[in-house]
Image 1 (cartoon, rainbow, N blue to C red):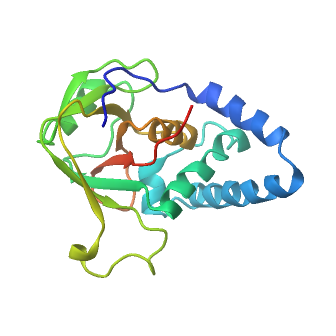
Image 2 (spheres, helix red, strand yellow):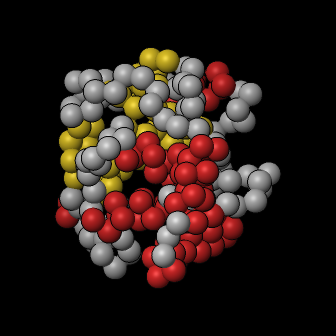
Length: 212
């Protein structure tokens, strides 16, 4: 199912330009719909208090939020609404380290028994990994109200290690890059900077297939 062995991600700059062009050509009514997603993710980013947002993306304040980037959140939100986004969480010793501390970042996730780093240099990511064992991912639900009360009631998928590969992203991450990774049917391992959860790595996969 997942056979990607190279970094197929696209740079955030290119994705932001695509998003801006898309917004410029939208009819007013459709623009207003997309703008509701832009406003939601923008608010969550600025408040920094939503755990799922911190796992999906993080911004460090060096750049102003751009609508072309944020518009990609509509795709991620659609995945959640349609029930195609799944996630597994792994406890790790530390939050992400700054980019210049690459070895510390790689050592920080070596304890995750289910993954193996196979390339520390990605063209547009922080590396490539493969699964060593079968991993169970649980559905990301749209709201607390729709989330099952008991863990055994969660929907889940099991991903076998055969040819299951994906990209790694440490620290800051624009939502456009997360969306593109998930739309490519590749696994995504996100390791964020400090936020409300203990040090955590999140493994994401989107089961929906996109026709290109």
